[in-house]
Length: 408
Image (tube, rainbow, N blue to C red):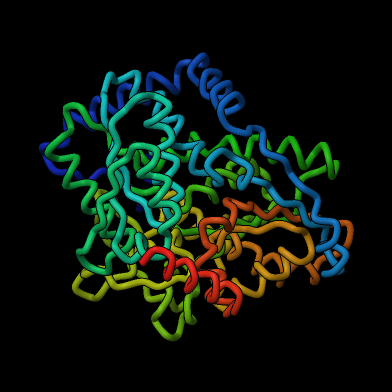
């Protein structure tokens, strides 16, 4: 198979001006992969600076409530900055230091990747610019606040749908003019090679840990593993621990938005989604696009899942039947979030709650000696405004009005 391709998906469709930059990136990445001391440096950094290994929590109350398979939750919400995103950016930070570059740029949707990149830049002493769709800036204001306080410059993107895909386009424009001293820290397993492979490598630490933990706690492999899928980094992270285990079913849960039939969603792999093969943003995958190849607007209650494409690795795994895909609607996400909070005292991010939706549907149909893992890719603190609005909480409304009056 040609390097950088996964079946028919992937590649590196980049302008000539970036060829030398990608050659240098590939060289340093391949060198790092071949150097066992680099991975150990990475693991040590994540153990010392973040919260690795993150726990695998047995959800006893939810298991009893649903009455089926044992439910285990991989706690990436306890990772530094509150999500799995730190795994990738800290790894790329080590590569940036090897390359001798002094500035990093990134795109972000939910803001978790932006916060993680700003944190990494502060840790390593890099200048940092974050591109974020104007709509996402509005609904993820707490994360924007922290990015700026960490020293990053946050640039709202007003083009297109003003969400993740537009932020990614703007970051590429920046990189073309600043590549000599700047590295683009892509946040998910998308984009031109080597980014999908490289991000998946750093995120594989989730699956490596989860595999050891489930064997220690359950005594054998899980029957199913669930993860939400936007671009696909958290899913690829945990799936890699079980890809070589044919008895473990892998389930990726996409954003069903208002329902697949409405067209107001961000699902690329479920039947009827309308996604088709295309080349954009430097790689080939399934995109939500018009017959003419124009990217369509997407919708999700979760800012981190409304991306128009999907990882070429996951597109291939889905095509081969190794990963099964489902979609969760906004309404189902709120219901799953509420149940998880009440039964386990855990507050998953809106993105992660998509995985909980499908697991909650399927766990009761399984036997009590079976086990599943849900990857809780992030915590819900960042979604306080969206969650409070969805619950139509009157005390929260009163609080917001009061604080607004105080700022006048």
